[in-house]
Image (tube, rainbow, N blue to C red):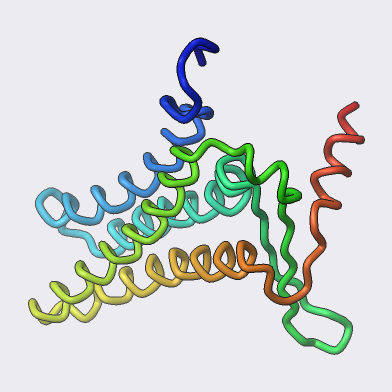
Length: 173
């Protein structure tokens, strides 16, 4: 990034932004285009769900941390209860994050879920219930990231703050 340019003009993490969008676009594009070229439902299911799972993992573990400074996960405690855990940078560090990176992260997160809903409606209209299964899995993964990052941003539940970020920093140093 050129230091003479005003802040916010460019993406601070263009490679992370690229992969954040690329996995989403690849899953959606494969699902849409596969109907034209592939007759085997199993192949369409496996490849689309695999691409959506890769997108889920990249968003949850890479782009969420780098682009918006947030991380979430879910654990099962000793009593068998599901416990959400959240990590975020401190307010000062969050304020320094690139606005374009953040904008791209949130908009693509929500638009991907909307795209899966629209594709699900088309599948229902065309009476393709089996393809609704693919949509259901992909939409579930998208919505899980939306819920996780939204709760993390708003500070719900069990908040571990930035302990993990400091642990990684100290482990590398």
